[in-house]
Length: 104
Image 1 (tube, rainbow, N blue to C red):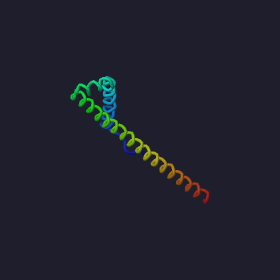
Image 2: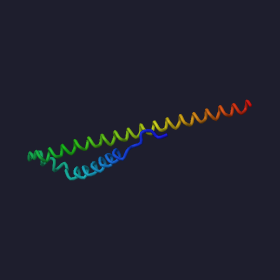
Image 3: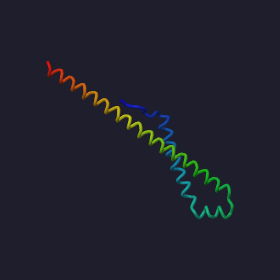
Image 4: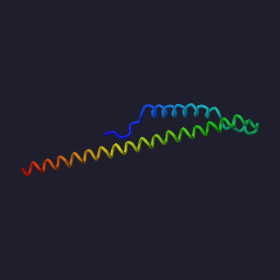
């Protein structure tokens, strides 16, 4: 019994988020501490705003990826519970059948 399978839209959104995070990481590599210091000193507001926007977007995407991982872990735990219940039910049924056969 499977509980809560991911649909293709959710999977695609996760893959997009991961790809976007990788792209943003490349942008971050280009923005060295030296460049940031120059931007601050030269009051390059647009560049600093862009950097802040990337950092905020990155945080949002990272949270979405982490939330998806937590959701997936929860679903796996529910699947494990369902599997255990199925196994326990089968064990109980087999035990009852064995007892009935022994009594006959």
